[in-house]
Image 1: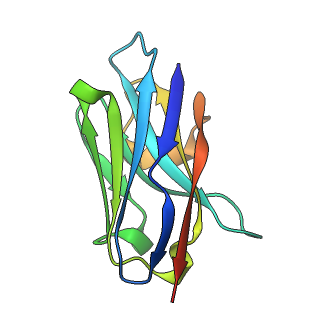
Image 2: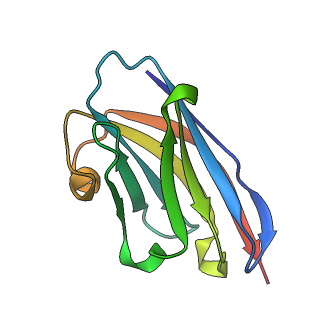
Image 3: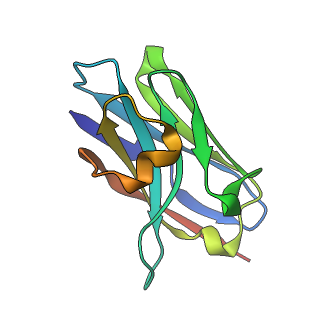
Length: 125
């Protein structure tokens, strides 16, 4: 299994970005993909996840209304649309996968099976 994150960049506060996590190699239908972020000097934080089994999604409270996770199964890609970017969204964003039928709200409490590399998001004022 491989996960490839992309789409990061430098944007001004209030702008938008769409991150992509292109995945390959899954041999099962039940798995979930989530996005983590890690800002300099801070612990890694899970922000959003999606069940590839049923499409259900989860967001942490601080990103609700601004982040939107979605999946294009034909392209084997999970997207994280980030709108109204804030300075505190500056971080390296990682996608990750957990195998099995899980509810997305439990994703960040589980052991991660696969990690992608990070993509940097920098928000400036």
